[in-house]
Each structure stands twice: as structure tokens, then as C-alpha cells.
Length: 450
Image (cartoon, rainbow, N blue to C red; front, side, top):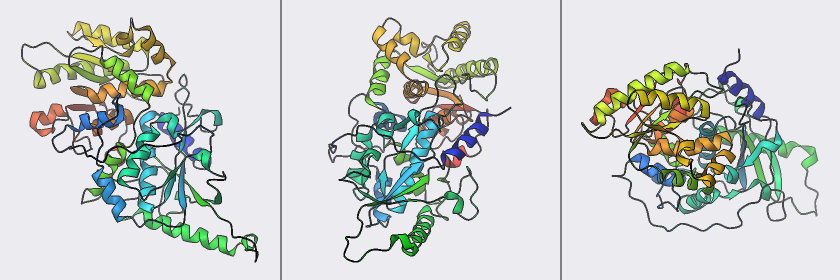
């Protein structure tokens, strides 16, 4: 039987040679945010992340200190080389991680960036990643808030130039070369295993491969310049696969690599409709809540519904015992799940254990407009709504083998990495993360590279 991981690897292998341009209307202009900085030293990381990714109104400008520092260290190219990433697919948070890989490659190699395009997987058949379906591809500004990305980079890393794929090959943005660098040409590289780290920097590999491509182009007899004719002008666009878990960001003893990775995550902001939905649903929650990622949808490779239900409810009881207020009212439980039939089972079981459980469909009940907006969203964009609640929750329960859960666990910790269960570390030891991930599924590379 094919596992979800096998399907993901197979699909992404196809994607590494299937890089597409999609037409989409691009934002004509960008307005730079004020130059003021958000003080984060005493802010809970989940609040900072929520503001940057989910706030309904414009977030307080964040200083991106690690990104700014990296941009100052980078040797920026002056030859109009732009990186265009492809091969990104799967679920929402896997794609977010691959976008971060793409951004990291560009900022370390000192290139410009072509905003990437990614396919939206089938909402009914979640293992169908639509890699070969051109109609499923959506440009970055359809997935996420491109204004936030471009404005933030222009403010803290003005050396990086960004174009939309629709602009390529136009009068304003001519393209001189379209080249490809293959990760498979890196010595010792194995597909879909982490490879680059501070001791084996991506910039070195990129420079070596780009020099080789330049030499091959020079030696190509078809590219000989005819005397008297103007030399071709335009960008050199380099296609590369932005592979999942490519960078070992925790292997830098200085910690700079992880801080940069965390900053790149704050560049990815959800679109306004998604943010407004999160805000509208939060308006229906009148008391503190715990968040539970109940991973029982059709593509699940984790333990059974019954097992997840038991360990989740046991952990909720333990979390309330350790972190709750004796004699106080229990918090609400918000369930992140994409299956309306399965959530009913959790609601009923939770009630028997003294927990009031809700979810996005219950909160929107009676608000026809909001309910219609939720139902109109694809599966992964509904997941973005749930993600906002999980980040915001007083305590979060998830699954180690899920990129969704692990991404949230990382975002809630001041280090940017899930440090272990708050149920084991206690009030002081968890740094305020208030997170517990069950050991369920293979997550051996998530700690270093997600």
C-alpha cells in the first residue's frame, strides 16, 4: 500500500522537472510599511507570529533582524540573475516550508527572485497533489499576501529584487537566458534528504553550477555574438527545485541559521479573505480555548481515530491539571479538522469528559455569510483558518509526524523549534510554549529542517 510519504516523494520527483509559468494578475505597486520596528524581546512568539501571518489589519512592522543580517553578509550578484523555484507541492504547511527553502536559496546566493507558483491539491482526494495539472497551479499572490512579502524584503533587504512570473518575457522584463541547476549535481546529495548547512553552504554550490552554465553558454556555437548587432539583454532566470527539508537549519552552532529560518516564516502572510475569516470566527469565541489538531481526514497515515481521541482527551485533562486555574471554568476546545463527520465524534466524547468542543462550522453556525465562505474554501485554505486558531490557543495538542502540527509547535516556541512536551517540561521548562505533540508518525527530519 502506498503511504502518504511515498506519494509525496513520487509527486515531488515529477515536480523537479516540471516547472511552470502561470498567468495571473499581479499587484501593480507596493507601499512600503513604516520604518518603525516591533519590539519582540518580551513578546510571546505565538503572538508575534499570529500578527505577521493572520492579523485582519496591517501587522506592526517587524524588524526581521536575522534576515537583515544575512542580507548584509550576502555577496549580491550584479548580473540580473533571478532564481525561480519549482517542485513545491503537498499540503499547506509543507508548501510553506518549501517557500522558505526558496527564499533562503535566493538570499544566500544573492539573486533576485521570481515569485513561485504552486499547485493546489485536490480537496476531495488529498493524495492528488496536481503536479501535472497546470490548471491547479496558483501563483504566490493567490496563495499568500505578496504585498507583505515584497514590502518586508524591500524594507530590510533592498538588495533582493522580486518579479512576478507574468512579468517575464515582457518588454519591461526581457529574459536573456533560462537555465536550470539540478540539486542532483551536488556531491552526495540524495533526493528529499536534508543536505545544505553552514558547513556545506548553498551559495558555494550555486556559484559553482552557475559558473559551469556560463562556460557552457560561452562555448555554444549558436550563441556567438554577431559583430554589429546589439548584444542580447535581459534577465538570466535559473530554475531550481525547492525541495522539502533541504536545509539543516539547526546545525549552525551560532544559531544564526535558525534565526534566519524563523524570520523567513514571518514573511509568509495569508491572504486577506483567510485572515478576515479567522478574525470573524475568533469574534464568536468569548473565553480562552485550547487547540487540538485532530488528524483523521481521508489521507491520514497516523493512528486511528479512537486512539487519537483517547490520547487527546487524556492530554487535555493533564494540561488543565498542570496549567489551568483550580476551581475555574475549563477553556473551550477548538478542533482543527477537515472532516465534518469526524468532528462530531470528538464533540460527543469531549462532552462526556467535561469539555465543550467547537470547530469552525459550529462557530459559523447562524452566520450564513461566514459559513458560505468557509465551505467555498479549498481544503488547504480551510486548514489555514484552523492554523490561526491553533497558533492563538492557550495550549496546543498535535502530532509529531504532521507538518501542520510541527509547524505550529515551532511557531509557539521562542526558539522557533518544538522543544518537547509542556506536559513533561512544566511551566518553567517549556518557555511558555504550552504545546504537546504526540509521537505519532515519522518526523525524524522535522526537528532539523521543517
